Image 1 (tube, rainbow, N blue to C red):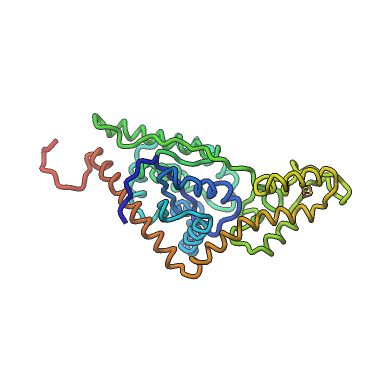
Image 2: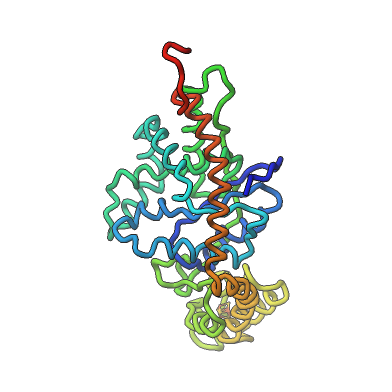
Length: 346
Ligand code: SF4
């Protein structure tokens, strides 16, 4: 498939290949991606090399996990006719550009990335004292710049990564672009809404907390998980009034329920007119309403996984063409093009 010429601004984003996605992934990123497909020229990649930065020791599930991520993307409404979906490691130019950027990126820039320090301190069960983990923002810069991305959809906490990408682009351009026009544009963060989505225990929804509602959970499982979800601790008895603003179920309603349901929740919770079981049932209704159509879309690919793989292969080929053209420019700018040049030639 040849790249479709377009005048739309280009958006780049990826998700690590960690297997099936949960509602937090959907609300935090995927839902925004689905909405961007027509406004921007979108490249979305399954970041399997990034998954290696923390899970390098066991790669037995990595390929299967990449496909699971893709299935959830398709289920959520990403459309291969309207965006390019691919696997990072199938476009090896990412790695080539990463090597070059590694050469020009000062160590201090990486050590001051806030998420680096934070994750080193918080993830204690894995040895993250690796070169790859320190350098993953450099790989991210390569992921973005190899497509000359205009925008990167991110939440607030990822803005420093985009800033680092801009610094790397600037440094490369300073060193190598000379009198030519700069090879790399400086991408902008595209701040996307990512409402707080609590897991069933009230903490942020995350696989590592075991508190997730998966996009693939069947209706009875969703209803069961909701039943066990924590609520406003002030509502000990049915007759105690509560406050949806301090209740994780209330947070779910705010994201997924209609205004009418929200009004019933506020009124019923504050006056103790409804019980939590009933309120959770309404939240489950709202969730099931968005999950069932996704699960139906997913079924087609689950029954024929080859279809999904073909989408990834076609997307990787399309991405590879763009990435290949950028690498030619990079090599030329650095005086390292692959073609023969007669000795002494300027
Ligand atoms: S009624 Fe609903 S919002 Fe109020 S505490 Fe119970 S579950 Fe939470």
